[in-house]
Length: 476
Image 1 (cartoon, one colour):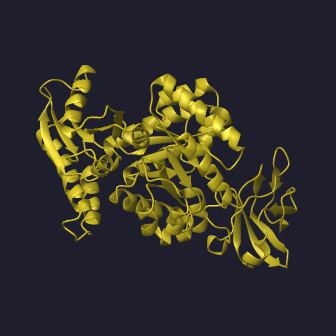
Image 2 (cartoon, helix red, strand yellow):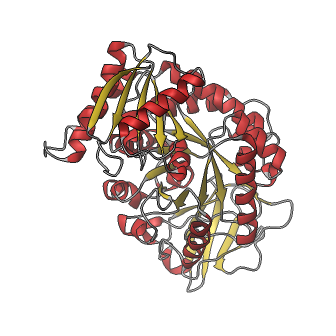
Image 3 (tube, rainbow, N blue to C red):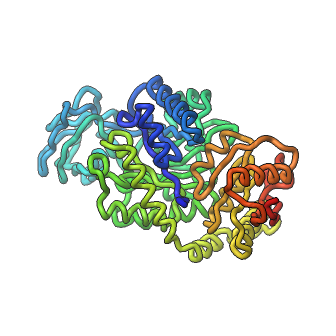
């Protein structure tokens, strides 16, 4: 059974309702709508197409919107792209009209002030790089170091420590208001540099509001990682821009560090960017891409993300099916014994033995160990906010985790959590009644049989937010 979740970006290649339904059937857990291009009306239309597709397939997929953030972009290059050759001289200026092979306009007024001679800047995902050789009050003189084809309105990298734009932008907040009104499940915040940036997104805490996902893509975000994790509900390792702010040799180690820190704090974490990039046009990934995906699973990621592969690719459904096969096989080889030791080192840092978090840690680990020792068929997690399920699954239990919640948004948000199968159940006064109803439903669906052992984890009352009860129950 696949435990690692799949996030896939929707776009022109996946806007047809039939394609969306096939993507869900192929293994899509969370659909991502990127808001950097297009209008609000376009994005809302895609949101409702996704909701319709989910209803038609009987699925509870989550929907994630990805805010544009303060990203600097080039003015549009000519249709078909513009070739930028190695060694070519080029100027960079503030503007929004057009870019060509001798002059790049970017939508950032302070470019000449904020870059320095000797800076190596990047276009797009870093395939095109240029070196600053001189500048005046309004013009930056540069030379192409590594050329390539510049298309559309690619991003333009300004060193993040000098970028004067703030997160969230006014446009971000307009998008937030519109999508909170329609009930979006998750919001990814771009170019986060501190916990203060996350606090700038003013929504109700999940599940009354959406999960807030901090995108780690700048040097400042890595330096302020602890505070960002504490003020976020989930995290995305956005390797594209992160790989521009750090030497490329550092990127695999940053990925491993960020994932470990997030999962130790019960925060789902998404690994993103160029995971199966060749599948934009190819029917199979490269060997290196397949290995990259598997290594992200071994690092402990909760989810992996497809971008252009499903947004503009030739076969979005095949890309998801391929990702599902790779992650399912990697899940089988995951080293759980070593992982538990890593997590225990992190949770052992909390010395307040009486705190609710320490009790939750102890019960979560105990549930996993007891389930393994007694041969339980499943861990039944009764949760309102989803936190209990996230706490349990960070220990990567061998048995399946079945999360039951009366909140439909919690069920959708749990589609991002590793190894969790969420189900919306009816409201009951006590956790015991919830467990009894859950076991009856599972038995009727032949997912459990009479006599099976299950471990039930919950709060004593569904009105509490702490995890304080663990029971071993025989399915009637």
